[in-house]
Length: 398
Image 1 (tube, rainbow, N blue to C red):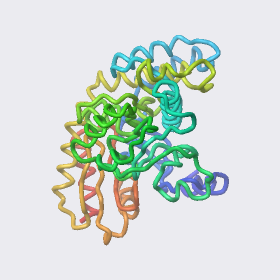
Image 2: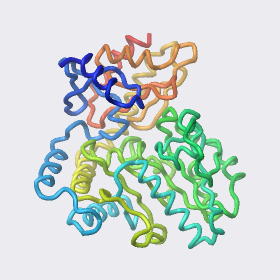
Image 3: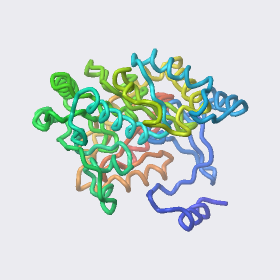
């Protein structure tokens, strides 16, 4: 079958909850993918940063296959021999005492929300059902009912009420606005160190440190949502490291899987995650041996292949090359590491048409917030591949 036929089948039988570019991918290797018609593309999205290690990384695929031949799922009714090792290795790598594995990024965030609320009631002493969590404008942490309840994107909320109470919204990047929102019932602040879906927004320098200090002063838990920005994407293991802080809790996902199997996790202290007792929270697939084996190898690849350092160096190179184009359509080029947003001027006519133009030239990227093109290739990309990608960008932006 060809691209047109696959799209027709999907349009007929699949729910229309996404608006993808019309490319039907059938295989991938490293930074490259191929469609069903044999066309080759440079992937500059990396499945929203889930494929930091590159498509079908041989070490991660090998770990998946070997574990799949042994045991894939035990549920948490029984123990398995991969979960303890993932928890230990993640703890040693990140410096967090306790790990709670889940499957999707949204599940990790939901887990964090439950944990900080229970901490608020059982440790901080907030009156029952009065806990408040502060989030930011333009946030994105998933699309569950609770998470969309603090979204500022109207489409994510419309038609899904009644929404979950207990959230306050403050302006992203404005520490004074955050300080004004604090009350004795505030239990946590949930923030993306770099907003991905918001348009690859890097907050002002000092913002994370200032809000972190305000959290410490007011006995509030600081949650860093590093699901997109973490695990090397920003040029650091975690983007919060640029501000020299250590959040009370971190949510991770996406690249934890190496793009091979859904796995996420919440990282925190024993004091905070210790509020969960058996039966309080769980997931049939959370911590399954297949996911844990994949995650363990994914983390090793990041470190042993130097992909975090590579992201830092090549991110600077990629941004500089894009800036050299000096396109009249571009308002701003921003980001950290290989997490890059090219914001277009309103008169440029939206980012979608440029993404479609790049697809036709063999580069896959995706618009976000209508006027931003996001460039976030697998971290295994090479300089010459960046050079080639920039040449294609030049053709559509100049």
